[in-house]
Amino acid sequence: MMKSWRVTLLPALLALMLPAWGFAQMSVDVSVGVPPPELPVYDQPPIPADGYIWTPGYWAWDDDVQDYYWVPGTWVPAPEPDYLWTPGYWGAENDVFLWHAGYWGPHVGFYGGVNYGYGYGGTGYEGGYWQGGHLYYNRSVNNISNVQITNVYNKTVINNVTINRVSYNGANGINAQPNAAQLAAARERHIGITPAQQQHFETARNDSAQHVSQNNGHPPVAATARAGAFTGAGVVPARGSGALSVVHSNPSRQTPSAPPQYEQRAPEQRATEPRAPTETRAAEQRAPEPRAAMEPRAPVQQARPAAPPAPHAAPPPHPAAHPPAHEEDHEHH
Image: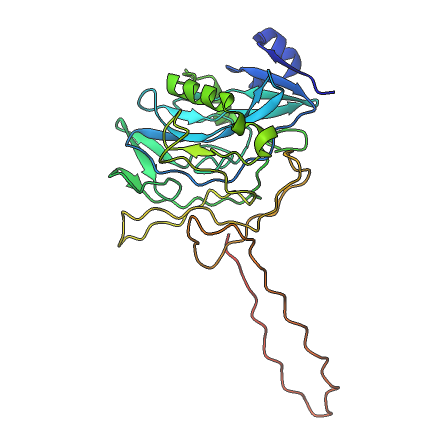
């Protein structure tokens, strides 16, 4: 039997349950034996204007209907200059899943090691930085294609860890702990979610199609260009299962206005139930050329390996010619 409680805990009580790093400005939803589903795969909509920061989508819990629902990723204005977004995350503690709320602050703190994509690869933020009161955007992880923004740069994001879509920290999920800089960020001055983010959250909760019981983990609105706008231009559905990538191809210098390439898709492999995987998925395989953003979802057909050559006859008494050397494939990660 599934049970859940929505609770607000004082720091003194939290000290009995959680590690010391876990109780900095935290709103907690507690559910027993119900891990959040995997993260859906989706394309990032174009940025609507300068000064907006990408906030990734996440699974939230609706206590009234006992169900998870997807809060889409969206672009939102920063509440003030020099503030960045630290995403919230689910953490498992003794078979109980706790929600650690996101916040705005001068530095990005700990978000469970969850790879949300588009600059949020599990630690820090590679999508941009503040300088002189202006936000500079990394074009390699942001979709800057329909507005004129001059404060941009290119920095390819390299991940040396297995990329998967697990959406929670601890237990059978992601094994990550905060470092010293992230602990320091948790003690800084924070700003909670903005009114636009609150409206976005409520809109998702009130839309039954966003609930996992209705969409089986593939929400019809996975991302939006503006908070709270669930219809019209800039609304992006989930693309289905696949490996999540935060690496985009750098735009050509000859065509600086061209949109960046989106993630590479692995063969579609949909789970029968929207539960977190019990084993880590393999890292995505890189194709020789970047693919178009909206190509069909058909699985990639893998070529069968060539049959091994027939055994060679026994060599003659005189020295045999050396066989040609086989080329060894190397793949750069």
